[in-house]
Image 1: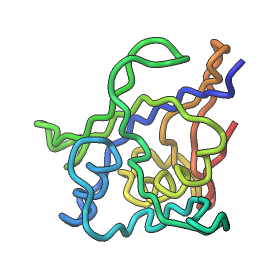
Image 2: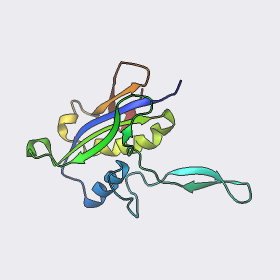
Image 3: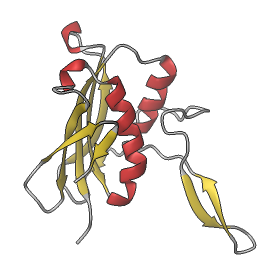
Image 4: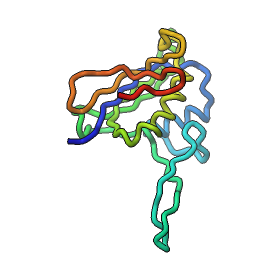
Length: 157
């Protein structure tokens, strides 16, 4: 049994995204090259063994929502799409993500989700302090749970 979750984000983003933010978000979605400097999620520390056998921390940036193709455990396809809707009523950016995620990645991915919550269109804020991003589902379950950022923290399953 694997501890894999389906992570689905369906979100309209406001117009306050800089070109640098769009570039970094596209990289995280597997849609563009890695920017020279990362600001949204700036560090990706990994402990590795050096030439002398000592453990050291290194920075190994990886796109957090960038897998595309066949899903491993949740069936179907893994996708990430960022586009400009033709109808301006839906905001300047539309984001749809379907990924597989392990609980070990909740913290790092949570940094990106918290940032996305700050950029979400008002329609995703039904109450003060809560932003609805989408949903999660354990790979062996048919029950979806709401994915929200409440008071600046991701509420994981």
